[in-house]
Image (cartoon, rainbow, N blue to C red; front, top):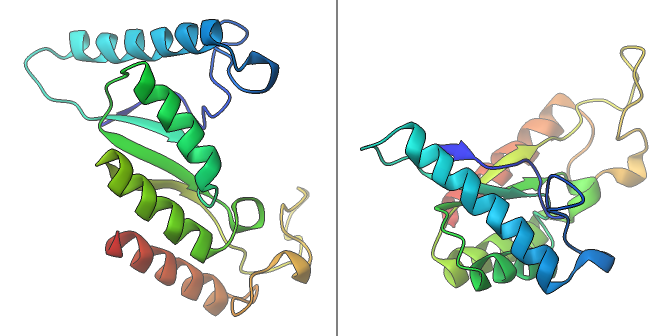
Length: 166
């Protein structure tokens, strides 16, 4: 499997491949999708006579409207790909219910496999090094999932269950 770009909800290789906001234009989407198709074709050319699944990865795990906006645009330009990759960080991307609704909709709307490419959940709110944590307050935690080893385990176990169900 080859992933073209990382969390490319706003495009890639700015400014040519930038999309969204004031760059949400036909010209920008054409340029961006041309980059995606060129990358895909390069992967296929690099390994002839082999089927290599292509993954498109965005960071909207619990955001169905944002996910649909992106993949509807990708599909309108007929970009071929095999797998939808999503990042899901619950303090930025919503609840497990939001994730469930989103990936169920994406799987049925686009008939693609879904992979949660990135995720995390804290086992502590304490700083254990000299780097700032993304999650440091109990208000950032989801109900039923404390910042403990068991809370982290339960979150990941439930996340895996959701993915398997889809």
